Amino acid sequence: MKLSKIDISKMQIERAIDLFVNESDYVSAITLAAAAEEIMAVLLSDNAQTSASESLYPWFQHKTKPANQKDDARKITSFSIDALKDTHQNTDDKIDITPVLAAQMLQRALVNYPRVVGKPTDKMIAFVKWFNTNEASVFEPISENN
Image (cartoon, rainbow, N blue to C red; front, top):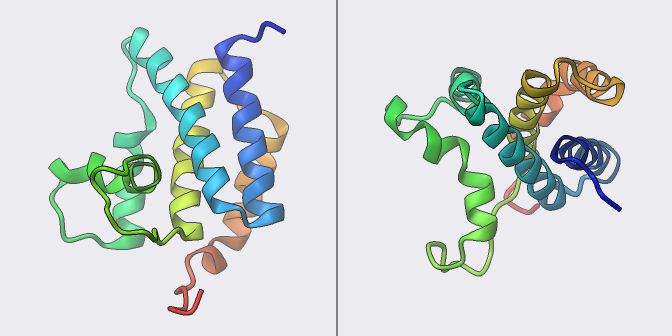
């Protein structure tokens, strides 16, 4: 089966949405959304366009209120995927994965996809509506016992 990079990223984003909403599988949602976001970021870069990281920084900063400067935006907004894949930097045996981290990575992929393709899919639009309705519960404080 031959698939275009755009088709692959669409499949990854839509599956990440299902995992996030229906299964609360935030690790897999982050991984799939990050893979799609990276594909789209490369395609955007090839066309001299910017990816979602910079445009989503104000949203992420507003929601999490980091003390860091904007120069650290990439580190802040890439924490979730870096923590999952970089075993050399993070020697802890446990990583705190929250719905916020998964939502952040999905948002990046959802911003990049229509920038490349022209418009989001129906499932992507439905997720944005769901997220807007449920945003407060996604950002509820997570108990230390979770």
